[in-house]
Length: 358
Image (tube, rainbow, N blue to C red; front, top):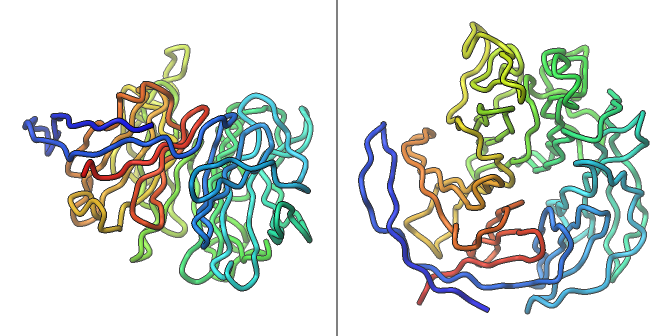
């Protein structure tokens, strides 16, 4: 099934609204019949792996056919916002066949974000080992983070949320909550992390980061959910404090003030923020040639608005924002760039591919 679409949109550039024609594109259902797909990773043979929040991992064939669940996955704590999150290939997957899974693990009174790796062999994971468990535990089934990305040096990044009821822990560098974690590919702390007393922590002051991508030039982009307002896009650097909850552009769900401050010395301002919240989920930097007009831009899923936001980047700064794919009219969990340059969008039950209309 496909939908051809051409829209007119508004760019907000430096506070000025100007009408501009959007690109022509076609939306194709690439795979359907899925149950809360959360993330996708593309395999060298043209197939893909898709996680389902309930704890299943499926291989999707190159033509979009969905296979049986992959066997021998780690046990997943499926409750609240907890479940099976990201799937990521090792940078040397062609040689070692290793994949990485992030997920919620534990029990109601003792749970956290974890990472396991295993060797993909047919429809089964072999030699599965849990290489990281969040060293700060919690008793809430929410705010896990769970996004992963590899850096060019082979180290692995993992986002962790603040656990909702533990938001002050995001400012404690010795806590594993509300952090960007950097580890070696075997789960050990990576050399060169900035805090000697907390060897896994790369940056801190985060709420619930559910978008993470690394550009070819090595820039780390991350977005996080705010409370009521204050969703943020941040460009991450080692050792920096991104403010939550000491500074925020949002208020509590009750309307109460979380902090009277939106900025403070020593705390990084977001590159972009949203008030009211869009509930960002999934993030990719588009560096392919299939849509040359989009090259170098960020794409963010917007759960609340049931659309994708394109953030126009210039010189590492957001200079415009465009609403896309609202005709899908469903919550967007993830958006990724495929190996052929198409965009792939994960909805509550399918994977949609975005290609040029012609």
